[in-house]
Amino acid sequence: MKETKRLILLPLTYDQLGKYLRCDNSLEEELNLNHAERIIGAELKEALEKTIIPMVADKSKDYLYYTLWTAISKKENKMVGDLCLYGEPNEKGEIEIGYGVYEEFRNQGYMTEMVLGMIEWAKAQPKIKAITASTDKDNLASFRVLKKNGFVKSGESEELFHWFLAIR
Image (cartoon, helix red, strand yellow):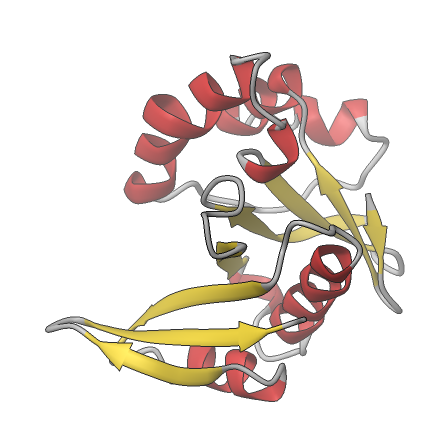
């Protein structure tokens, strides 16, 4: 768990991921949260079913690097968005992050704060030397989040911009 000024970033356990995926408010009830309107997009649903949940179930892996971290607003006592890592640090000490905020909480600075919280968490992990991210080329909001947190554009593919932040 990692706290920021307005948020609690909570890494979900295997059982909690199942509740998250069901979208039936059972996770919110377990965590004593107010219900939030959240919709799981097809891409996240597939990632949960095919990658995230199986990786978290693998006891040989450090689940913190594979699970979904939910962001909880302290003031609203609601889940406002999610962040995930795409595995443990590679041979260069890099991790990749992905993130999203629920519709009703957009344009309130939550994504910037979520990414900052994950940067602070990563700085406390000795194996992590850098954080990377990729964004769709038309996702201006995501560019702003990364730039505000010190990321620099490190390359691009046909559809994506790639970003980099050295933390050591």
